[in-house]
Length: 298
Picture (cartoon, one colour):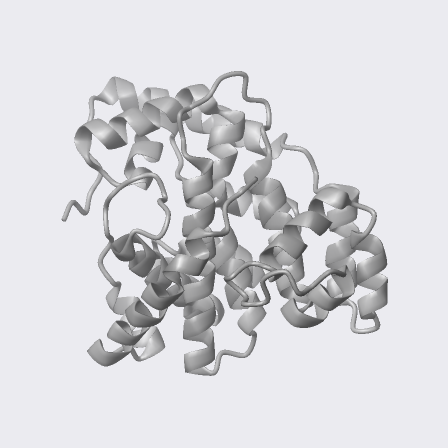
């Protein structure tokens, strides 16, 4: 399996440094988090917030409401048409999962500044991200992780940098996709070559700007680079990394390339993984695959 980015000429490297500077500036100029999301994040983190408080806020945005109700009524959660109110959905899903789904569907549906299509399959990425969220949640439950909903959020948003590239830098991102297809290389290597930074770096910039929890930011930032992860976030980043690899292997959606990454030795150590445990997560995600595939973006 290819482990290193292809080498190019010095002129390309110099151009990439300029691309990186301009791209980071462009990412920093992204819109701030919409008011409803800022308020939602504040409410979710406030222990005094009630189900009614959050329900009243979310009821003001019909697109968010429909996304949440669609998820809770999908086969993915097993209620299939039985949940009619946002209050019921909040009780079933929990505050943090509600926040993640609301933010995730909004981000994945955004068109940004794009005037032309890059050809990227945003829906396939959404399915992949939902699969990674599901796998991270399974791993969190199995390992007794302190915050299961945090694991779901980290999995859901781990590839959000690709959405940023597609929405705001579609012309360059189209070149990334061509390089991935022609040279059969992982997406992050093509991003580095064409854009000067990869989707994990872009995700860190966006999620920090939107003031999401540092644990979620670190999982998105380091899921391809676990050995650099701050120790306090290593377990979460490892769960996302292992789930990402499993979803790639099982073809649950697509992150944009066909490569199946190796399981990092760092993740094996952090999660105390054994062959039976790895097989177990694969089996559980395979069982959930059909339900995950049903939850497409509208």
